[in-house]
Structure formats: structure tokens, C-alpha cells
Image (cartoon, rainbow, N blue to C red; front, side, top):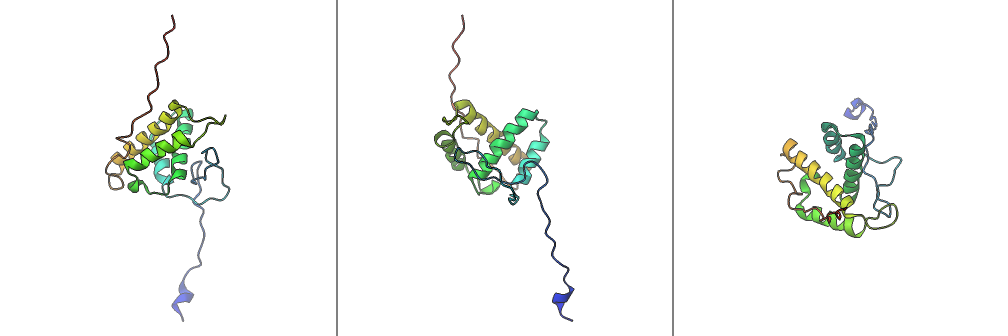
Length: 153
């Protein structure tokens, strides 16, 4: 009897289980596009763990998911391969290429929200998984300066 005859049949198991399962492609405006049968990105498991480890309000959870999805769609690098220059390039991408729903460039506060999400995620990743990422690549990236609102008299 041949050894090949003893192997069990191969079963295909879907890994899609939650709302943050697949890294989407980006639309023309830099938003994640919905994909019906996308493969699960291994990086998403850490993102899910990060989001679930924080007690986030529903709207904050949506913002974190949206911004981390956008970042995953922007790069194919593994978490341990991300360097400060990649974060700076991503920030430049947000400033120069991504548009709001109205077709305008992202506001400084939207850019800051995206960068703050990355800072929070990578800070958590360095603490929770120092074997994956020893140094936070977002540490040297600065937020956009937003002018103070005028005083109302």
C-alpha cells in the first residue's frame, strides 16, 4: 500500500469570523472597498486583539477599525518590518492623496486621528509583543499643528 493512500482528505476552512477580517483594497478616495471573498490578512489578528483589548466606545472602535484597515490596505509589510520612514510616507499619503467624502483633502484633525490611531496601536504592539516589534515606529512622527480657535467675546 502506498503512503499517499493513507493521507486524510484536505479540508478548506474559512478564517473569516468578524467585522475586521480582510484587508480591503482602497477606493479612489483612499477608503477601504468592500470585497466579498477576500483572504484573511495575518496582520488583522493583532489588530483585532488590540481593538478587543481596549474598552472603546462604539464610535472610537469604528474610527480605529477604519484607520487600521486603511493602513493595512496601504502596505504589505508585516508589523515587524514597519519603520519610522514608512509611517512618514503613510502620513504624506494621507495629506496628498486621500480625500474626504466631499472630495476635498483630509483635514488636519482627520490626519491626526489616523496617526494617533497608529501611535496607539504600535505602542500597544511594542508592549504586548516585543518579539514582533521592539521599537515603536510612530515615536518620531509628529501630529499636524491645528491652530487654536479664535476667542469668542
